[in-house]
Length: 315
Image 1 (cartoon, rainbow, N blue to C red):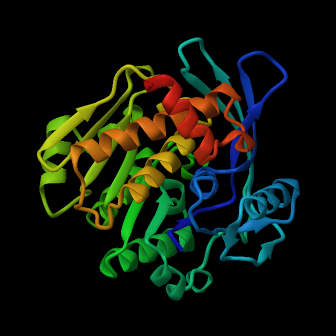
Image 2: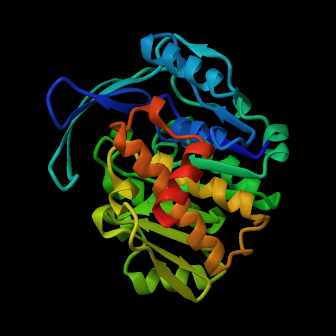
């Protein structure tokens, strides 16, 4: 497989009944990234608990419809169901109200992610929600470290706002920092960038052997900033609001990873400015297309649509 995405049965946004309001439906960052990459014609697997409730059925069917191989097929009777009511201001800022029903058997166990599956993959992707609870955290950490040691590229998406953290921001910071030496490509929003400290500390981190070779900070309307080797890069002149708006971040990262794959990058350190710039444009246009359809999981764009829009924007 080109990519394996590891995560929980969380949720994606769909439009609510009131203007500017979104209600979450089945999905979640790891599943959305898996689908976004699959729509870019790459071979993708997803390993995460899928429940028997309406959300779980929807997610299971959506993964299969997008040719994502489900690596953890066992259904759970009480997977987590979380509803997030999200209000967006005009500039895209979000306010959240969560209602959750925690499930006792939602957590991914070590024997449910086969090492042979990791051995087949080129990239292993995980999200911070997977580090938040019990055996799932242990399983995710083990998968990241195994993949890193096996020479795979490890991708990680930080989001401490996930309800699974129960508001314990410090625990999220500790968990993410503990795994940084095993993460190659890291996506983090500006709201969570203080996980890593100042921009100077991020630059130092990517120049050391102790952290990611690539850090992408998504900055909403300000665009995105990237740190790699001894360089940094920002993007301008494209629909920048797509990089950190509801429902678009997963499309951004899925497109970004797909572009790096198509560019021929085959190791975490094999990154050049032009390649990264192309991936940023590809990812941002992917996110922007998702924004146009209000971020629902069904709106994640495919490769042909992304390429057409890049041609239209950049000529």
